[in-house]
Image (cartoon, rainbow over all chains, first blue to last red):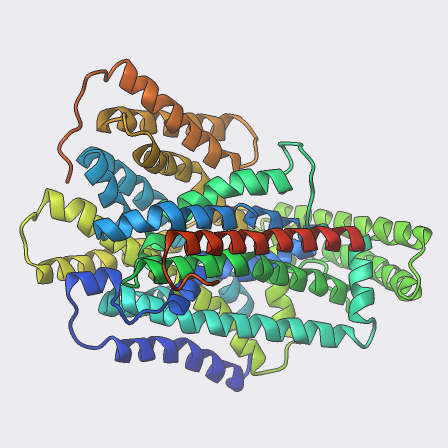
Amino acid sequence: MNRLDYFVLLATILAIPLYGLWRTRGGASLGQYLKGDASIRWGTIGLSVLATQAGPITFLSMPGQAYESGIGFIQNYFGQPLALVIVCAVFVPIYQRLKVFTAYQYLGQRFDRKTQMLGAFLFLVQRGIAAGITIYAPAIILSALLGWRLDLTIWLAGGLVIIYTVAGGTKIVSLTQRYQMMVILIGMAIAFAVVVYRLSGEISFGHALEVAGKMGKLQAVDFSIDPHKRYTFWSGIIGGFFLALSYFGADQSQVQRYLAGDSIKASRFGLLFNAIVKVPMQFFILLLGAMVFMFYQFEKPPVYFNRPAYERAVEHGAGPELAALETESDHVFEEKRAVIRAASAQLSQPAVDQMLQLDARAHEIRDRTKKVLDHAGADPKSKESDYVFITFVLQQMPHGFVGLLVAVILCATMSVTAATLNALGSTTAIDFYRPLLRPQASDHHYVIATQVLTTVWGLVAIAVASFANLVENLIEAGNILGSVFYGSILGLFLVAFFVRAVRGSAVFVAALLAQALVFLLFFTTSIGYLWYNLIGCAAVLLFAPILQQTIFRGTQADVGV
Amino acid sequence: MNATTDTPQSWRKAYAMALGLFALEVLLLYLFTIRFS
């Protein structure tokens, strides 16, 4: 990165929060601080909802995922449109009518205080950890590749977010997310244009698609019913549906986004916008990864994309072994490039077989390289594919755009973290602080309390990020964590909406049992993580009526909040 | 999406339209898969 890149980066990540602070200057009532105000239109809500889900992991890991194993991940989003329609039809009118600040207040009104607190607690646990991962994941990669200090990178991203989120509340989160999402979309479109342009000297876009398809990178839809396959049409449409229903209906970081407007219409349009644009947007990001894969069929890729880990291994004495692997990798690359060049005009089956064989050899060399790195104690913590896209950006994009793309990663980090901290602070203040500690205080008091709690959660996220040991794959970590908790939370809400006979104690115990069941399955089986959403939710829906009819038969509803 | 009148019927139309567009997106992805696999 040169001075121009740093200028573009700093200008982008600072200008948006500063504009947000200017737009939200002056005091706010509790309602305005937690729910925004009437000036937030459906377009801003739509972009804000989109930005809350599309974190840095989406833009760092997803192209790498497509590079590694194709675009099948798109199927994980197939459950979303139907879930969003149900959220529009069922959840939104209830939240708007009851004028709740958090989704869990509804549980308190429908059941009792302990169920409200259980829903809020499950949310706080998983989102509190997820906020740390959101900051840590891009920070470790950017700091490793750009030579930045990890602790400073974490504090830069986290600290900036704390300042503007605490100052402006929900309105500033929505406003900044709108512009951050625009920067992200423009940046990714430019990256796509650059990779296609750089490819055009070797192969046309159409032929690149042909070759990528034959190399197994473009299978978007897979109707296989094998439950151990992670990405299939069925796991996406069923498991993804429950994940999305829980995420959009019962996760305060999303609920707060679409309650930011003052009308049901604005909330619904914002959500329907997401139902329509989400799948094409994810497809476009995955296709970008497939095109980066094609680019590296003509331009020699590093034998291992995680260069900092590679260099540590060289320092630890693995240099000769790695040099031999690099030479072997270069030979395979040259051979594969020659086959692809010869075959790109007319793809015959023998040429395709040869390409696949050489690609498998390249994979095998990378696996051996990873083993050498492990052996040398170089500790390649994150998955190698997470470094693919950012390596392409840093090495192949023109100056200026490099700064913009790094800004894209930081904008995504900031937008998700802001939404999460905003929700964590609000939930702690409304679902715990107000009912338990200060039930009768003034609006102003609760605004201050929410600001303090948002700051505390920000510091917790930074602490988690500072002490985290990175999980194997960034892109999966958030979804796995969510899937383990979301099923039970969704179950609470679905019982609340649709099983009128069930009271607070029965649903409370049912949710605890369901959560225990999910933990048990998580630690003892290897089923695809999306299914936990379905299992947790179904368990609450099953246990709650049974408990109501047996152990809690005849109990009355407890007093709600 | 003609839901500006804010009636239940117009919202049902909006939902149907959103789901119809999604179905079209999946169909196109399926055709894309067949074409390039």
